[in-house]
Length: 260
Image (cartoon, rainbow, N blue to C red; front, side, top):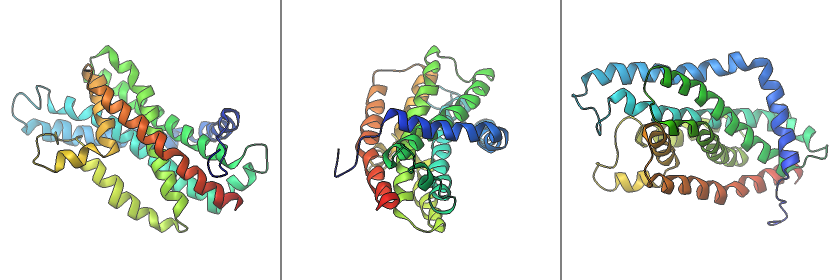
């Protein structure tokens, strides 16, 4: 127990995850369509379009389309988890009062937040796996290590769910999400190494990028798609430590909002 906050129970968190899955099964086609199509549009416009102008040899020996494809996988997980943990969570919290109803059952506030983390990660893995199958069919993923990409997307989704839930727990107006997506998510999307290597930029760009979560998520997906090196373990460790350190903060704040 940390400051009155209990450690979420797996059973309670699973019940919250199960509720979300039940609703998702009714609307999965309309929910998944935008998240599935959007990375394909980027892959076509930038990978095939802009990639045609990249000189022979591509980037680090890869064709440009093969270079950006794993990065788009990571960003797809980020967007899926971010929308789930911001707009969707806020609606459940403030408008539909779903969490108020849930905590009248044996499921407590800590379980609610942990279940939402797990669900956002699940959605990221689902969307990313669908996109991954397209990349495999296009011949853009050749390493057998790619079978580990779906579980990697699960943890990436949980990481961004923790970030999104933290912001959601601090605001009382849904309009504020425009600040989060404009000032946090969009910059991450542009400068985390999806479209160009940031390591060759002058200081402090590489150093700043190293401290951002999507940078490590992109490295993990790219390594698993092309064949990992031991250096990817640093990226995995960064994701796990960042998520573990931050995870209890939104739980504590959301608990105060729900039962305070």
